Image (tube, rainbow, N blue to C red; front, side):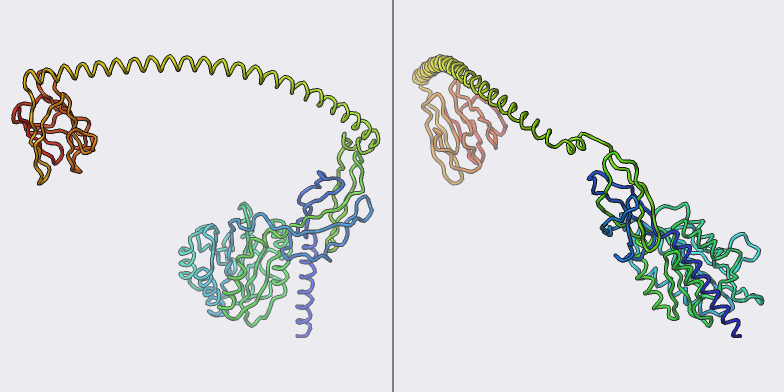
Length: 505
């Protein structure tokens, strides 16, 4: 019994050492080449697959051309923290340990999808595994591929029936590594952040299925997909192989007996899956000792014992580098050029000033000539307009006198019997043109809001009187008909809004 216990301990230690050695090969890399735009100050991006933040003491040294350089490290946020993520949930359903593990996993997943704040763009797939028995796959897919439909996922989880398979030989063995390997193959073509979450009883996985731990671990690290293991704490205790496997993929391992505690842990962990998938980026800066035009120099950067190498390519010789090497001659030539430039600027300024003065003088002469011409044209136009207005006024006066004589000869002085509301009065027409409206400048003022300011005119045309609508709002009505212009006869009734006029000759 003691030998078996020691054997388990040594097996666990060897698995952890194997996982650590595989992890060290994937700890980090230079993600972006050197930036020499501000040479000799150069920088590059170091990417760490490990999602746990590195400490300052983790960055050991930076060598350029074999010599150590002082360098600065600054963590920068990942650009895809908010990218949609894809999660595969693997549910181990062991029949021989009763309904404890089954009920535990079902409660955790149901509660997680019911209560967790999951972005609408994230996708999930749920698959069950136990032991492959004469089937091509170790996985039983509960969902139709990866989906965003949370109600469909919850329905698939709640409607899944407990496994009834019992295996007399090796009852605790499962195909967990085979299931993870198949899950990795499913997720490999997908883009964006990815993760696998495994719910297991945590039995010893030394002889688990046909895939070895080392093979699956290497595949998970190569695909950069972390595996998170939630163990239902049963009689077997914590499985060191499972814990080492999860942490070596940069996932996590935790053991629970209470479903509510496990649900809370999964809910808290989920928002971090995207960041953990991406790891962390660090900007490394240092002052180079290289010169322009030198050959490529090897850079050695050590992080936690893992050394990354890359070549630094200094910028080639340019005018800028030549000017730096011949600074004295550059200063002398610059002073002479400045003196010549200053003389040229003064000469050009004086020439331009004189030319501008001449242009202003010519412009003033032209402006005065144009103004005089416009003034003469305006005077001529004003005189013509004045003469035209005088002629028109004389013609109007002559026409008025003619019409007035006709009215006197014919003794044609009509009367208008006016009714505005309750007021009635009589107005005698003794002019050829009588203006009617609400404003005080009319000849006949009708104080009523339905009468327009200048509603109509009564005009004598030499024979008869006519009423003319002056584009009023409520129009002109003669004997019940709307008119724009109409000849008036004795007794005609004229409607102007609410005012009524009776025409008598």
